[in-house]
Length: 209
Image (cartoon, rainbow, N blue to C red; front, side):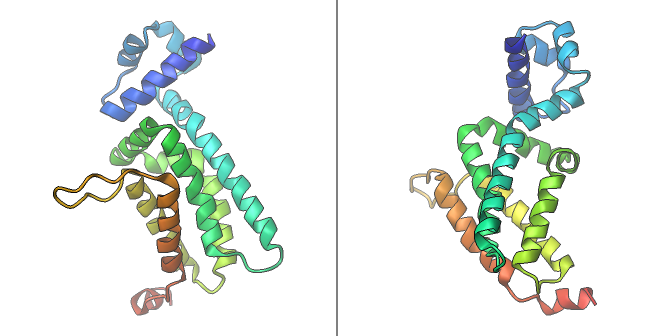
């Protein structure tokens, strides 16, 4: 039974990532997985529930690692200031180590973003983690207005998503760079840390008044 469930999850992750959620039917999944329709309905009541399970089996461990890192960095900071770079590292590093282990899952999440499903996925699987990190960023950047902080978190997530799809395009004739997860995280932490600490622009400041 466990083997059947894993076959269904592995096949659904691959097909959702390759073809998209809307273009993949349950019948297509069972045909590719070599299981019967009763099996998929036994384990999952609907395609939406199947997608939830596909996302959570990879996102769950990543989110747990994020929170464990954040707990550690907050404990190390004690009653002193918490560095924005530490918050960024806790949020980003588990994602890129997970992407190294499962590039197919990265493709799936890219598809979900393209199909406009990320708001639903974030609401179901990531919102408590996002809220926890918002509080950590507020502690690290206490003088940053709340609306501006949320914009910068929004930009952070977009930058992370873009970086997950690979290194920059090389110049003509140059060898493509490999995606070194640790190196990418270090670059992102440096880049985004500067962005989070940047002064609020005059236009943004006037909007918040």
